[in-house]
Image (cartoon, rainbow, N blue to C red; front, side, top):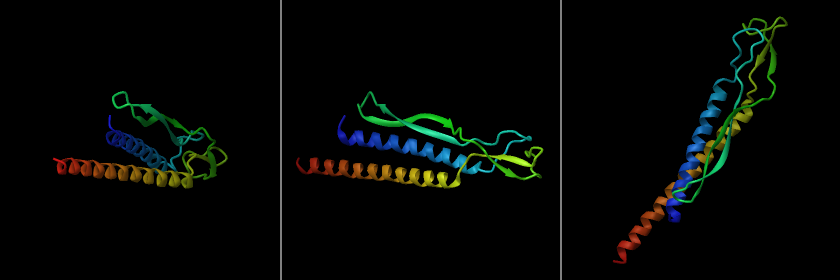
Length: 139
């Protein structure tokens, strides 16, 4: 496979994994205050994503893919909120282990990586168009 087609495949796989990463981060942000239904029940647990290299057998290009979707096993934070249905007998509620600063940083990084892959695709398309124009001119 030619290098221009390979770069399109690589950038496309990068866009796919960053889109998945954006979805995971969005779920974490949306559930940052989701507690359990009953006293002492565990709240929402932060989701994580791990990337891995994948070899495309057709093109021979090293692509990126989602290796694993998991959950963050860090401890839950407890807050005093005796009126909450999930409060225990001490009035403490287990809160999700979602840190909004980390999620916002991940969101920003994923968005920038997605945009970088879009730019790679645009530039590759321009190179392909320029190559076709050169071939037409040489005839």
